[in-house]
Amino acid sequence: MSIVVEHEKRRKEILEKALDVFIDEGFEDATFQKIADRCAITRTTLYIYFKNKKDIFTYSIKLLLAKVEDDIQQIRADSSLGVVEKITKILSDVLQRLEENRRLLSVILNYLLYLSKSDSDPETRVRRRTLKLRHILASIVIEGIKAGELAPISIKTVDDLLYSFIEAASFRLVVLKRETVGELKKAAALAVARLAAE
Image (cartoon, rainbow, N blue to C red; front, side, top):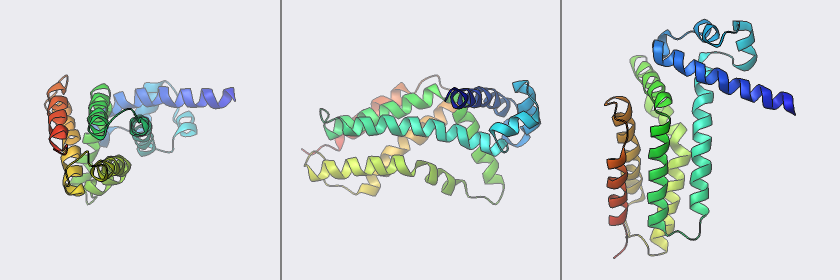
């Protein structure tokens, strides 16, 4: 059991140092050798933990999204909260997580720009990675409409509205280099409150 724990701990240490390489070099110029050098290990040792730089990158995204999804599911299951409170708390928590993971977010946006230069479709990749989050938000909205807590409205429209706060936060944190997105948290809370049935 301790071997598995040590293996996972080592993967996370490599990931932290790999993020530095991605940030310093950009996704395109980051190489497996540069990552191994930064970690003070050989490429052969790095291959024990990851297949290639894309594998490192994908792992970091999965790690972040798994934590976010767990937090969101806990909020969704909290019967002491109304639908408006749940959605507001979820958005606030996701925006907070983006602030805390600004470095990874920067690498993700760099990677998406890299994909947009090639023939790849970054929108499809983003949608695939965020599908679960969107589904959870949409199902909470549906529950709210059925319970009469939210005004009847297009689920797709609300989903796009809620997700736009996440996109705006990403832009502000990485491109505009804002330290916080507190104003977006307030705007999201106001927008969600407006969805409540009167």
